[in-house]
Image (cartoon, rainbow, N blue to C red; front, side, top):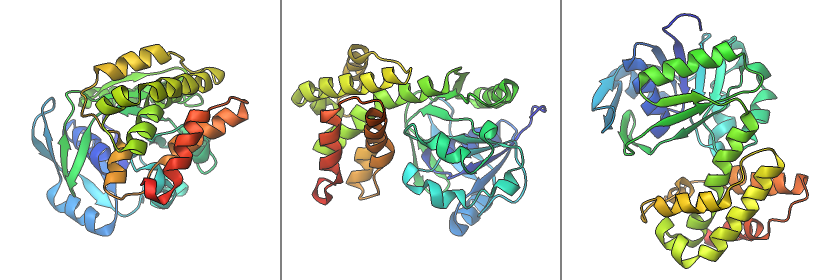
Length: 301
């Protein structure tokens, strides 16, 4: 990735993937979207249309295919955790070459899973803070006034992270490199898990959760912080609660939106992973365990 212009594959050109694909294409990079045959044909013909307050309204051309057939500098994985394994069939390790695999996935277990199937030093986990929705194939609505990316990857050569981060940052999203992969993933987990579990369990937006279920929210934040701390991650439950209090009351989690639309939930990648991490370090998380049990029941969805 020495040249300024990169070849980037995007596995799952939905809300996040479609936005990043369009921004990278507009910035002059070659972008190959990997999707089903029908979506790939639509993207080849029409490109990706973005509506965004910070980045403008524009249409960017992209290439598209049903699987990766040539080496790339980076492959962004922007599918949900529930669709990860079937989607990876579109990215054969032999085709990837020495390209970076950059998963934008919730949870903390996916890097190890990917490193079991691809060279470990090529897996560079990323975290994105954005609200972006695919309203139709190739049509993306970017609703948040921001798009912020953290790139990490302990075994990844730093110069490769720098090249990727520079390309993303120049394309629009504020991008930084974080030095500690575990801490970066747990920082996301400690914020996401309480929000996802409680809004989905009670089918309420954040405003109602933080007033009607504040005691449970506070207890869950304490549990999540304790687990994070045991893995060397951040631990600031009071700060997280204060941050939740600044969010608009109508805020919903992506898991809650999935439940409302009867889509598969990322319950195992978020709640399940939290319980497994707690068990490995002998930490009691009764509130989290109770919420996961309730959400595993069919009627809870």
